Length: 230
Image 1 (cartoon, rainbow, N blue to C red):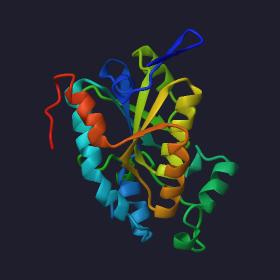
Image 2 (tube, one colour):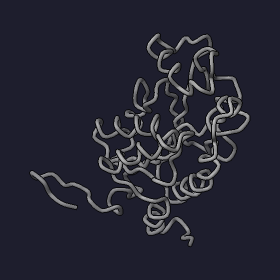
Image 3 (spheres, rainbow, N blue to C red):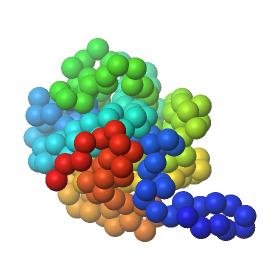
């Protein structure tokens, strides 16, 4: 750590992700986004990055649970009949996957009560783990996420999930604007568009701390609660 203008600033990963003041945000690990039978899978969108990153997200989630790190599942939500979609949000959705969508209406996905809104197998909340519903890309916009984090004395958020250039980056930016340290778990974020993923990661590496899941796991192991793995 360093001191700047009398303010203590964390600089080491061990300081940043100390379980005492860290929350793991699991962004949108929902069937509509990452499962073949979900809305995006039905459109033929490339989900290969998600298949690759699921085991690493699972390991990071297990590490958080064993170390006592606060776990928050962020769940994208869209009300039926587009009741949560403004005209601008519909236009935003029209820009998504135009090629796959062809001339069909703007995408609608993750509607409560549909299978696609649910968390993908293996990523369901356990016990008293928190779930935050969001209606826009950022996990902070119009939600109680900031209240939950501050109520639990959280200083750092470790961000994982999807999509890198969308809900992950939007949540990371708003976390920083709300004065949280941000650590991107680099191998635990993914997209259905690798070029956009790469562009987003290039940007985020210049704005946030970025670490591999194994590096974060080693810090959590040193708390004495998480069994170290190779």
